[in-house]
Image (cartoon, rainbow, N blue to C red; front, side, top):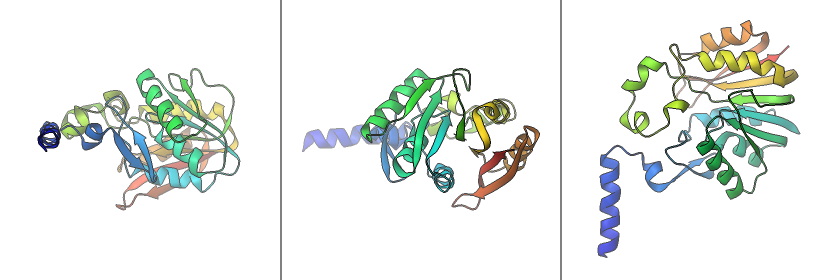
Amino acid sequence: PKIQEEAYMELVEQRAKHIPLQLITGTQEFMGLEFDVTSDVLIPRQDTEVLVEEVLKVCNQTSVLDMCTGSGCIIISLAKLGNIRKAVGADLSDKALKIAEKNAGKHNIKVEFIRSNLFEKIEGVYDIVVSNPPYIPSGEIKGLMPEVRDHEPIMALDGDQDGLAFYRRIAEEGKDHLKENGTIFFEIGYNQAQDVKKILQNAGFGDIKIRKDLSGLDRVVSGRRL
């Protein structure tokens, strides 16, 4: 039918403008769950599933804080698939939090979402802090694929001059919100493992582990609060 043909051509045109398919359909699958996405959040990536899988291994009546939660895909997946006592997601973007709340409702999951500039509005301590923070060096943003550069929030990508600013702050400030022996889990860029390991060591974390993603690239760094 003509109406279907027109709708299809519209989709083709949008893709030709480098609009990511996920923003055209409005959804993305992550950890076997469907999440709503818009240009106000980072589109969930398969690489990030490694982060969730690592946290799931240690979830046992656990309290988890997801810093820079975006679409909520990390904390919602953990709450849906893991044994979690308390789930909290924090982000500075009101628009992102609206989508995260919608996604939690979609999966019938109880997550508390907090608008906070990192730990500014966070109270109490957690067993686990997890984060996929902005980690692309500012100078590399313009070289990203147009799908990412022009259609995903720069705020969720830009990790300052060296890409490590958020790791420093989250490691340093996160200590005060982790129980003794609590663990921090970071997603990292493929070439950042040693830098993030040093940041965690300097912040007083031990038992630091690095895990690879499905492509064999370093993707997750974790450390325990001593």
